[in-house]
Length: 152
Image (cartoon, rainbow, N blue to C red):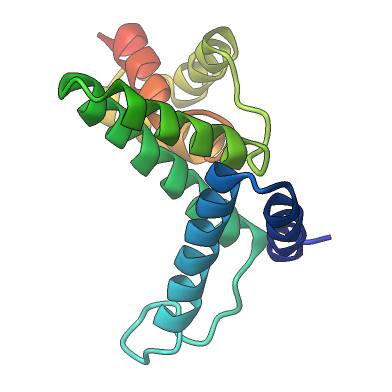
């Protein structure tokens, strides 16, 4: 079953269970997917008329999670813990659609391999290659921290 079908099925289940945070999170992801599909109907778009892949759909979910993490940070700074808790509940609902994320140690091991493969410790080169290899499997911020640590 593809991600879109899984989202439809999970939305129906969330509605039956009256799980408001799951309903909201899934609806927003479905809207973002719809926006991406619509954007691909524009001849000016680089991906004009290309069908959506599972990777594209995972990127949409990943972006939704990232937006919520940024919101949590802002709500926490503003002293709005109740709103941060709602955003966290939505992240928890969306996290199940993402592949298992790598730990800091696993990321460090991969970045060390990249450094060995490239035979350089230049941050831009190592970061670019690491981001490419770890796309979707690791949090970008964490990859950036590890690369800075190992190249600095």
